[in-house]
Image 1 (tube, one colour):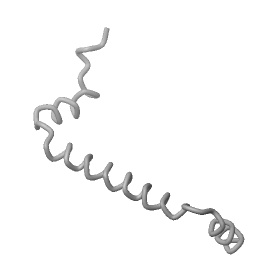
Image 2: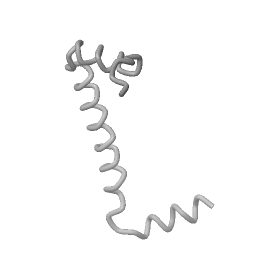
Image 3: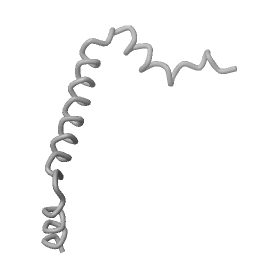
Length: 59
């Protein structure tokens, strides 16, 4: 089954760029996510982590 799919994909020109683009999007997303986590203010992280437990904002 896989050989039929593999040979079908070989006939499409320029298809080798799609795995590279998806890997770059994946890598850039997680690099930006790690950067945001390490540069986020501790007060913001603390406030967001306590938000589900905060019952004072209920109408």
